[in-house]
Length: 404
Image (cartoon, rainbow, N blue to C red; front, side, top):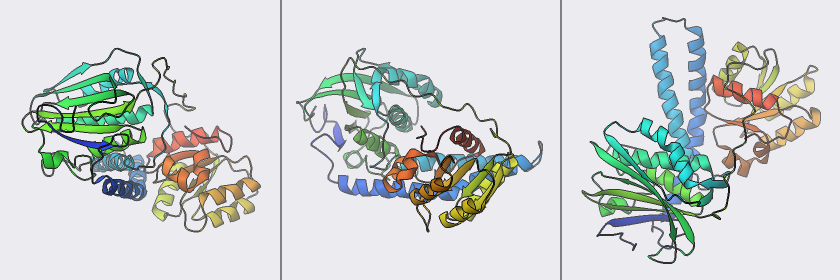
């Protein structure tokens, strides 16, 4: 396969391992980092919206005329949260949890979800290699990449069409493919295809391959970011009137590898507070977020003391002569870092479990605040069920245990 694909197809590549990286790669990386940073700030702003919607739903009785409007606000806020989470995936420095993953098993495991999300007029065709090839990967991230490709392919077919998925083991060293053994995951659609000018920029954040106004241009850039973090690269082949094929190339692991079993969660489906009456100290510098979390925990029966800084947290811990069951704290605060604060808190109360909250994801915080990497963590924005589940998990652990 040459740089322009087969039969005159126009090809573009976003590459970490391949030799033909796009000229705009450096600018794309800067845009991706900016988008991820915006995602964190956006999540912080969205957190009190979701929190207060939850509280409002609790106060409105069944049949209240405002319940439908509140439900619409919740639906919009949930969509905004999903958008912020997609933006965060663009962060080129995200830390992944890598394990041996069988690509064929991953694809087959995603089929029920894909069939549910695709329109009835889109036919799904799947062909897999039938072999033992594994890649070292973060399973959830690869599943997300596959979903993004399926969503992108469906959007390229405004009417009835076919979405094909196949997995193949390929040897490098020819047709500009770097030497080594690769696993290729390919998704093709029977849509209208793309012009050369679009294909060449398809992996840049904000460059949409859809009709104007048809999307934010995040699908392919998110896929490329995920694959780059796995040491692979992505190629897009397209021709107007023929359709588009997007190929993910991932370094193959030993064929005898065995897929790791994900660790079991320490908690089950949230159904409310685990320990009504438990004493919680909340540290959050954003007053809207602080009031929302405090009100949510109080409604669930927790005893909550809230402060707006690390300094006031230390003052409160020193002053209180009653037991504390949990510390919930924002990570990025103006007066004192989360790492410094938690270290000093544990000098006073070494057994106090901690739940960190932030609009940034764990990997971003791990580069800035090391304490967040070894404490339980909940990313904003979250709803009451997310909060109660994280609180129960944190309270059941020992300080310093890394949450999953």
